[in-house]
Length: 354
Image (cartoon, rainbow, N blue to C red; front, side, top):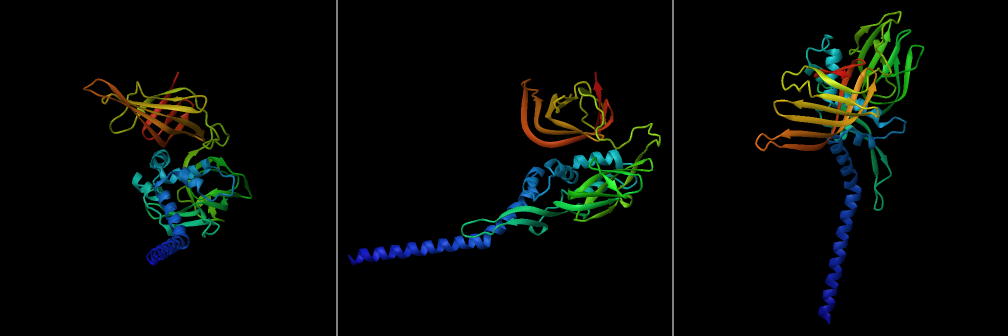
């Protein structure tokens, strides 16, 4: 009897000690571990995720959309995007000796952020019954050459312009009064500028990195003259809300690559009325074709293709069979609209095929 009682007491003490230890571990988890662990997850996600994840977890009390955020994000983190801009505008501008110098200034995809680089918007407190939730508020980022910027929602940014001028940020024309253009809400980071003054058009890139920033447009180091327009308006202005482009099939006309140019006969871009696009390139020597499917938009003087799926068809010389390799992608291509039937980037030129 006494032996059974001792066993019960021992079991009771063991259960109590075990429960007490579990409770202590839970206390440590709630009050000393959980919050910092969640922040480390956000850091890792930013360093590995795409713009959609960042936007979905970004503090945003404005009406700015994912598309607004993605314009800036892609300008900073998409080398293909930057490469197109360099060859379209800056290659012969004298501002940069080579493409790599341009990347060093404007590409932000090299440096990884640390937990101290992120300011969090916090909701509630972690306790025994609830967990604190987080949003990104400001993410401090750095280019290859050490230029600092901030991803996050910023307010009250002013652009000072000259008399009788016109300013567009990310191809959206601003309303200006008394030579000042004010944006109430804008996502921080890099943005493109189209500026027209005294019959001359300029292009530039501006770094928005703080609230109440005051930008002197004419003093921007990146501002370059891209075309002089006729004062009598007999020529088309460079700043356009929506360039004209034929809908249909565009055949590959020129290839500017050093090697592995696709077939001009078989390669094409199909633009459809519903906003979808097929992009196909065929490599004759490899007997292989690449098909990208996605959507397109016309933004200013650019055709922007966004792809979500990809099929690579390769030929097996031994079996004489074709194999389709399907995959999901998240990529973007940009072409400058030369005219209503010609699009071009640094790699290819396509012409409308009737």
